[in-house]
Structures are given as C-alpha cells and as structure tokens.
Length: 141
Length: 146
Image 1 (cartoon, chains in turn orange, red):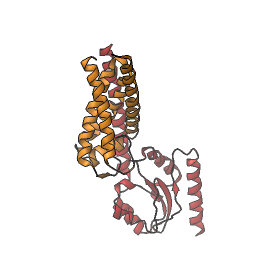
Image 2 (spheres, one colour):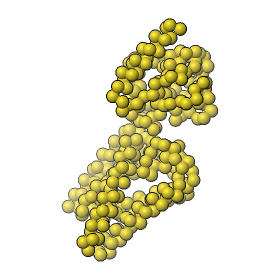
Image 3 (cartoon, chains in turn yellow, purple):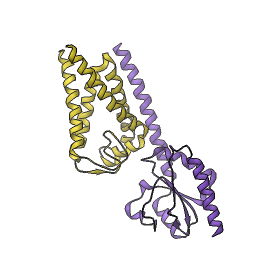
Image 4 (cartoon, one colour):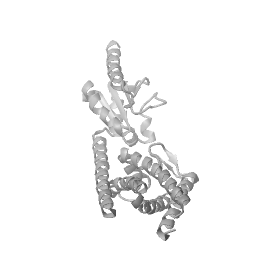
C-alpha cells in the first residue's frame, strides 16, 4: 500500500474511532435512555429484546473503536463500521422528519430531535469512508 | 494474535453489555418505585403539603441517586417522587401556576400547589447537597411561619 494511502487510512481510522468512542460512551453511560430510544421511539423490537440488544449495540460500537486503533484488526473495524452504518441508515431513512423525544440515538442522546437530511448525510459519509478503506484492504491495494 | 484479539474483544463486549444491562435494570427498578401521574394528581388535588421531587431518569440517569439523599432529610410520606418522562402533556396541567417546570428539581408544595421557586438538581454541582438541605430547612421554616 502507498505511504500516502496508509496515512489516509490512519487518519480515517482515528476520526472514526473518535466518533464511535463518543457515541458508544454516551450510550453506555445512559444505557436506559438508549434502550428507550430502541424500544419506544424506533419500535423495532420488543422491550425484552431491546433490553438485551441495545446494550450489545453500544458495546459493539466500543469494540469498533478498539479494532480501528489496532493495526492488525483495523480492517475488521472498517467492516464493522460499514455494517453498523448500514443498520443505522436502514433505521433512520424511513423515519426522516420524525421528532424523537430522546434524540435519534445516532451520535448523541437526550434532547428531543428531528431526524433531518443532515443526520442521513453524516451517516452516509461515514459509510462511504469505511466502505472505501474496507475495499482497499480486502482487495489488497 | 488475531484469535487472542478476538477473544479479548468478546470479553470486553460481554463485560460492557452486562454493565449496560444492569444499568437498565436499576433504572427500571427506580421507575417502578415512583408515583404514577394519577396518584400525584390525586394527592395534589387533596391538598398535599410537603415536597415534590421531579426526576427524569431517562435523560439524567445519575439523578436517581438523589432519591436516597432526599429520603434521609424528608420523611417519605412528605415527598412526592415522580418521573416526568412518564407524564404526558395533559398531566403537566396539574401543576397549576407553573409555567416553566424545571427538572430534575425539588419544589415545596403547599395545599397541593407547587411553589414556583424550586431548586434545580444539578449533580455535577459539588455544592448541590448543601443547597438541597438548605432549601428543605428554609421551606419547612416558611411553612411553619405560615
């Protein structure tokens, strides 16, 4: 891999790690708030399932941070970011314009928030960056 | 190296998930102990005297710890403890005369009416506990004089 590509990859990994670190720690600090977003705002799964899956999702985000900053795990980190962003976008896009009482749970909790195009663009940008570096690593450039 | 990393990741994942699940369980237990809107309304309409501790444990999870502190200073029968996230817009109407209801907060209640000069509970304020005790003493003194 070219030197400049390595530098770019590390820059992307660090930026993504910071974003996911902030997101995961907020969700872990207020696990109950995130659980209510998943079970009551998005209504994707039942409450008992949300009580298990929402902590798991916050923990996965934290694992992604570690993987992104570990050289031999970085490619898995990028792949996990792609998977998470696809999931987040699949949840966000159908609810565009909805005002959620405890926020969208994307990269911040607590305040009532409308899901706007900005949220979708931001998540899409993260998805694009992670996808590019996943492909570069998997194709061996 | 890869296997070890994956194994360590799995351990961290489990530990964090268990921690977060425990937090959810604790918050649910605290919420279950709080008064529902109907009960708060009935008590206020019956001319309740004492204090009203309004929390929002969904947005401010750390404020649940304030319950134990308040319980040490006020008898449980003299304080209405409720979570505002379980109230809907029409429930808020029961707090007559309060235009801006701040929460988490502690307010004194006289004949079922909340005093608008409530104390906003900020757990990050190192002097918060002192301010609460002062507020309780001051409110009790005012009630005695009246």
